[in-house]
Length: 242
Image (cartoon, rainbow, N blue to C red; front, side, top):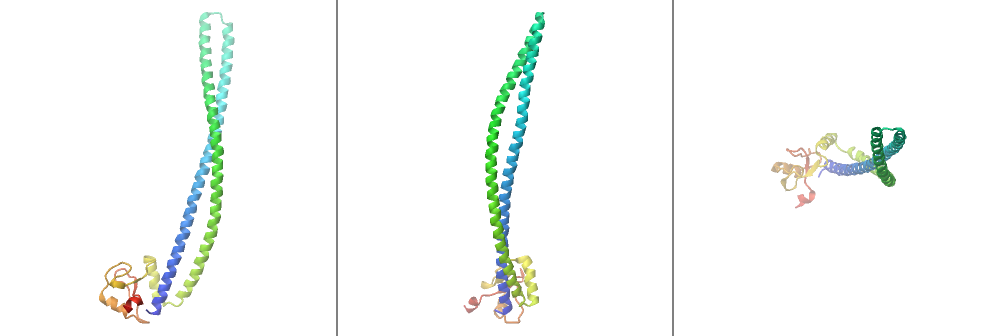
């Protein structure tokens, strides 16, 4: 195996490491994004409960006013009833008083039910607040952990890229350009084995002449590529020994 091919293989192995690290970084970020969404959803639910609590307070005031209005109406009707002398007017006022009393009882019943719901809502608000605080604290802790992980990953990527720069300094510009073009299309499999007369990338059968060219490859010779996928081909030295 010539030196150019060896260096390209080293470059490929390094690029595989960088790809894996970048994938790990993206997974970590995506997972944290999911945690953030869960926290936001919990916070939105809590806000909705608080808004509902405020609406229920407004409705409670309205029901209390309805009861007060019904009391005033009943009192007014009873005062008028005491003044009338005709039976027909008395009966009409009696009917109005009865309707006002029924309306008052309905309002009182609605108020009792509403107070019960308000108490239940208050429990939900307090419980929700506790849950949101717990989710928030958990999210913030994970966010801090992720910051540390990302700094470590960034450090690794920086070191690997430094090593990568050292490697490419010793690779012929022609073959480095070939590698980079293949990287855009075929990464991470750019340089593949041609053992068993098959391309290790696209798995097509290779002509005997291609295999012969690979086996006779010497320093300074042009690298051999697959006619189908364009990947750079090589054969393990152990396979050649066989």
